[in-house]
Image (cartoon, rainbow, N blue to C red; front, side):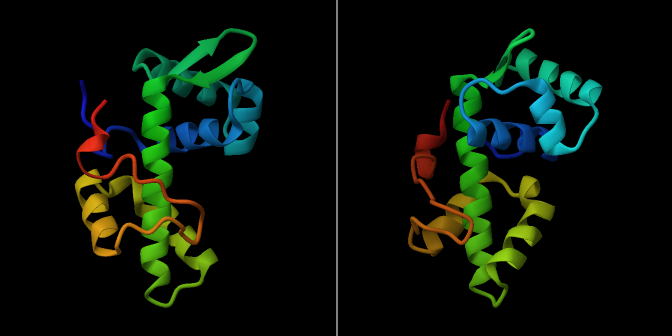
Length: 143
């Protein structure tokens, strides 16, 4: 089993997984391209890479869905964003500012750091960008 480090994927691939989590079950590749503002060929290549790595299932001509592995990673990435946004809001940034700032650097922050920040903040359950789940804190982040 692989442990989530938070640094496995590029920022763009993280965005794909977060979008698929937000959208739900089967998402058309054209919708992914439109929402992420990328060419269809770019999204097809990224989806292929994510599929080969076991994060998504690609059903040709139907769409893409997260695998169990992909869902666990996507949930961690959403939690990481929400924890970091909440942290920045404690230092005077508005909800919108903290969300935008975190989007610039979140993919560079490891799970170890997130777990420590989350612990220092008392394991909050609500952030400025959404709900924070704690299933991935501590040793529960193993896949």
